[in-house]
Image (cartoon, rainbow, N blue to C red; front, side, top):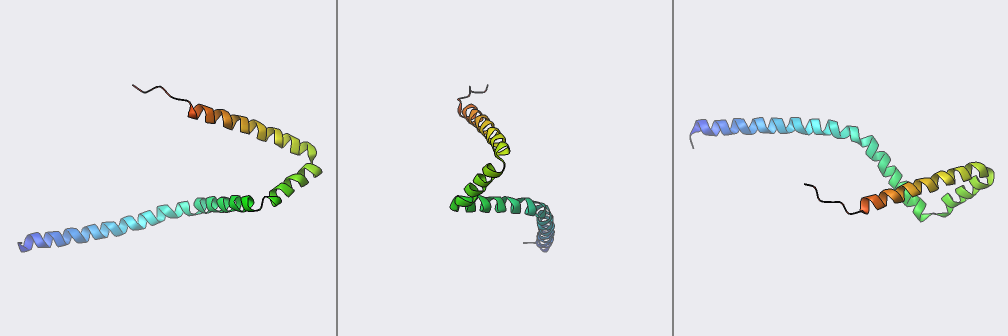
Length: 102
């Protein structure tokens, strides 16, 4: 291999290494912006898992709310029921067969 070609390849390799290092720094900075939202998602998943393992606590809190604020509890139960109805309708629409495009 001629020395000029080898030197060009070495130079190109160094340029690529430098560019790769720059891209890693940029990616790290961009990924840092996702750290907090993803941390919140992890916390929400952990809380959901905990509530599934200890259903007596959320149920107890719900009973306490019903006893202390029955009107508010009934209102929120109505909202939840409406939301569930919307959820079911959306699920049915999503499951419905669609005509082919084109």
